Image (cartoon, rainbow, N blue to C red):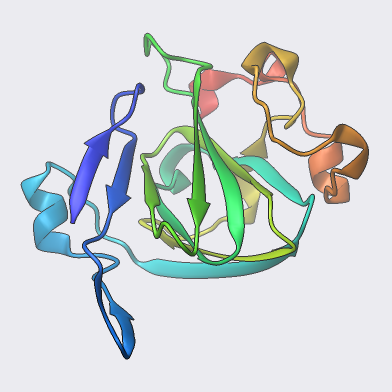
Length: 183
């Protein structure tokens, strides 16, 4: 397993070592000891999975306060553009983002720490997306930022007229309208 830093501190790309033969392949998708060796000390307590169709954009979502979540995300089927936006107060990269293509073929994962907004766009016909969380979901603590906030400069790689969003995501505020001290 290789763990690479990104241009934003504490966000990492994780690439597993894949063992292939005539039967197929095997890899470790998570190893707590290897994460700890890289300084990534998370206690994952919940796994989530979603399936989405081409053009779906989920996010940008976050959990506030004591319910903030770190996530280790990956794609089991298809391809997505995964995005993490830094919402850490005082961070030199506040409002900046990391975007990484995660696919069932490249088996890459993105490690997103707490106090980040997270979202993804589905680039393939369908995608099955899985993520580990280090905290429970709390509806009262959910928040979000509009995916199309021009100040973020995110290219979701989906034509805007083909974007599929939940009703909730369509009305999320811009970053400038979110109080970062609550995150």
